[in-house]
Image 1 (cartoon, rainbow, N blue to C red):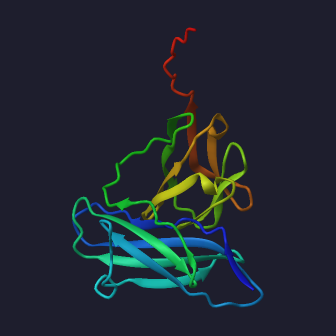
Image 2 (spheres, helix red, strand yellow):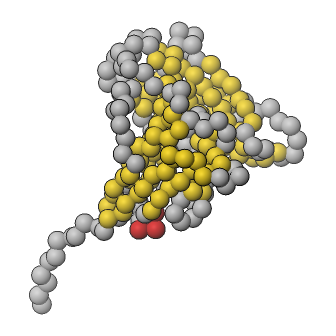
Image 3 (spheres, helix red, strand yellow):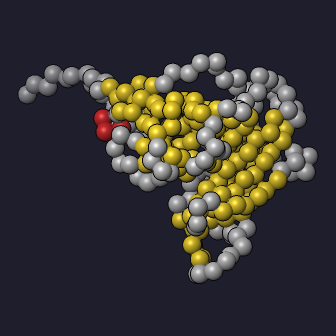
Length: 233
């Protein structure tokens, strides 16, 4: 018996580059849990979209596919797309298909833009709204996890792989991961932020040792005041 669970929405990874008008290589990562009674070869494929249109010429765009095991039952699939004629405004998405029936949602839209030189180590959001987090963190050499103020681990990381843990799976969508030699920029949405999400998010090794310079504060402000209506009888 074979079944797939915890199928995480795919996300796109790219190397940091000062150019936004030239060739770009993008990687689509799909992470899922696979359970079976034995060693199973599972077919995973990836669909790509550019500016909303399916990429049909996989040879011209040098699309490659590869499967790997990550921590036991956890698997990840990487599809690479090379585009030699990118232009400003181009955007990309990817979607994973596992076996014959299991299909992921489309990734968040990836748009190639030059990253700023400096980053804030905090995000401010109103309660009930979505927090868009941009977090620059050191390029760790080993697996680590991000501890949230409540509910335990937000995710487990081994760059460029990121696995969102429950109960955050339904509220966190990775937008993109941008890597360089010594750091990575992780961008994601935390939807429907509450006061319980507020606080310090910190990185720890799997031995629970803190990772220096790897933390981010989330400030959740009160809800916007709704207009008051004078109701008279």
